[in-house]
Amino acid sequence: MVPLPSTVPACNSVPCVLLALVSTLSSQFSVCFVLPQLLAQEQNACTTGGKELGDWEKDWQESRIGFHKPGVHMMLKKYIHLVLAGRSKICFFLPLCGKTVDMKWLADMGHSVVGVEISEKAIREFFEESKLTYSEEPVPTIPGAKVYKSSDGNISLYQCDLYSFSSSIGGQFGAIWDRGSLVAINSGDREKYIALMTSLMDKDCTYLLETSSYNPELYPGPPFCLPEEQVQTLFGKSFNFQLLDSEELLLKDLKGLDRLTELIFLITGKK
Ligand code: SAH
Image 1 (cartoon, rainbow, N blue to C red):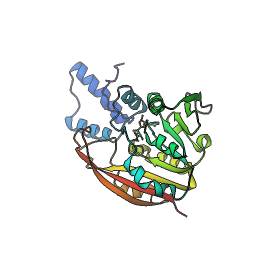
Image 2: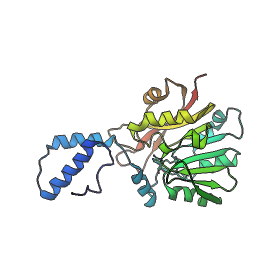
Image 3: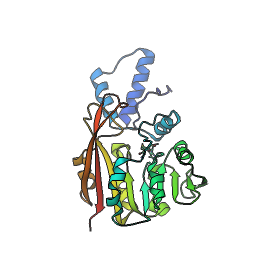
Image 4: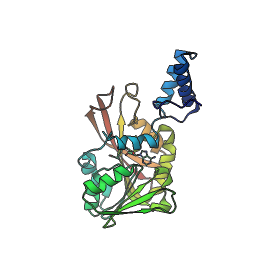
């Protein structure tokens, strides 16, 4: 069996895997039996696929973490009063948390924070860079998963695939801060992702969502392009949602894309 090349586009679909196999075979045996047009079409289809868990872990190992911000996210600071809506000491959920410093900021305000992140390196760096002592233990209901907890118990980070996490493990939350998360997952997983977020929201939950809008012909993602119409399609039926803000950001590290518009939404349950 010919091994798949390491440059195979991260994609589960049968056409993509076939394509990778065909390109490997054709390059190894110098037999070009695929119409270039077909190849181009399939490559395009692959770009909507996205990244696998192993790709993210590799990015962390090789410190390709251009998404990480050294400071607290400006939009979280700007809209925290709407998220809190007069409440104090609430429990925040940060899906795909990386090592964002927003978690420490929220915990320092007296809230508790639960995050989910596949990269162990990200989690350890979060605690170490925040100068927080922590413990680690296995999660009995998720094989191979661990939970890392700050010594004061206010921050718990689950190292596992997001889709293994559920309200039976973490309970329900008063707020969700979704930055670089919905836009990071593969587009085919969006319904599953939103079903999970919905199950994690308590009845008063406020969900602050950041998405990116840009010309998808210039860059395949992640972050994937998620303009307001798509947010409406995903959340509009079951939730109230409001576009709070938008800001054009200049970029250095996404090939082909020099700017994108960051959109901030507030999502709440329909009462
Ligand atoms: N929210 C963070 C990180 C965003 S990048 C921030 O603002 O900095 C997306 C992160 O999700 C990466 O750290 C990646 O390792 C992690 N990730 C991607 N898919 C995942 C999955 N299915 N389960 C758990 N973590 C995942």
